[in-house]
Length: 571
Image 1 (cartoon, rainbow, N blue to C red):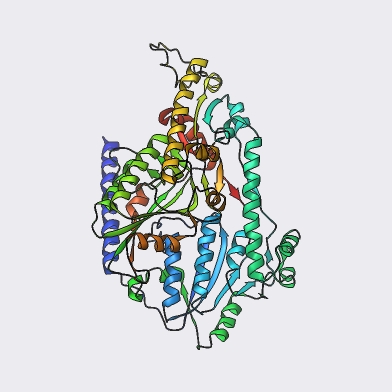
Image 2 (image 1 turned 90 degrees about the horizontal axis):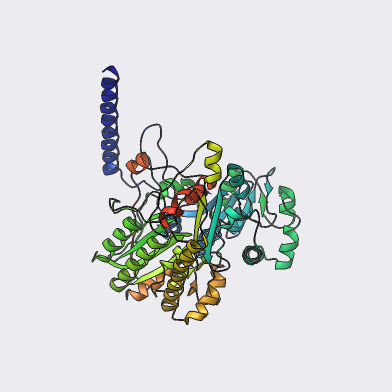
């Protein structure tokens, strides 16, 4: 009885505390006013870690309070605001430990280049920068590095992770079937190194990305590509070597950067404006809003089916078809939305869920002008959902394509033996045990699965051929599960243009018959997540946890996958 009363009291107290926090958050949001921006301000643009596509959760109160952090669209809007805001005299970029892909890097770099066209100074101050941070900083007119710091520019590599030896140790065997010789998602479970096909694709990706890095640095630092390649071969660089080789402009401390900028601006004392503060300045207060609305719909993460009770907001983790399709229908029925940019950052996922989203995407395309904007990754199911026939915009470094299908099933018999577990089965029906986790697939079962995989692959290729207005055989030769970079995909007709959010906005305005000079209001879908989403959401898996979850849970329950064959970490 005492335990029951204690539990009841604790539950009531937690409920009251939760209600208090909710009321406090709502009251704060209602009374919060846009921040004041001083004249002669310098926007201190701090970018670090992962910059998500979706607006992250802000905790507005208490000891857990966090400052607003930018999303990709938020950074894009920050630079647009800074370019036209007379109170902003300059921008200082501080990029640190970025963990974003090369698509997002190209988006930010293009945004910085656009800001420079305003005539306002753009300086970069770096702390132990790697290739990502340095590539981004080359958009600035001056690059600063600390006097005792170093530039970790040494080239590029791609690392793939394989779990076969781990699975062998615990007694797990995996069978994988796929269509497309490059669709080697299952290799992480069945091999210990790259297959020849994977090595071919990875070599192509590294060569292309490295070439873009070299050419970007060469153009910005006024060097030849050969000179830059030779320099990178000497990296990493101590600060004085980076200066001597013309990779940075000055060795200085952070306060000295702002002092130099104050002399450059010649506008008196400058005031530092944090990124988190400027995020709260409404775009329409600077004349960047408009009477017509463009939806920015973010599809971010692995594609799963979801459940019927998913609410209308996208999941905290990935793209749940049920919830995402509700968003698509809501946008399609909203008369205030003049056009839609679908921003995709996904390696794909469940085949059925991808198809359900594809269907709703095509229905939306019949109701509204639509343009697809690809981020770091829009591959396999992430590419499939984009097959509406609408314009597709990608970055040179976007990972896309991967048109293929894969199925895998683990055999846990060896693991069960180690744990002292056994199974005894009575089955009726020739294929009743096709998804059993206690034995391998038989040849007839493999043939049955191959029949489904072949049909699914044919459907995928046919839908791409129809959307891209190309013969089936031509798409089939480009498919085979192969991952392409954005510039490679464009030359093969899999995407339409190179560009980012700016170009996507230009195209959707054209389709909606909105004059190019007219400002529009960008409406984000899904909206910024609430504190309740954070309190009741789940944390991220590690890579191993995520992949083992896919192995044991997702494959047997979801069946066929349209997912990119590997996780790429290019450094």
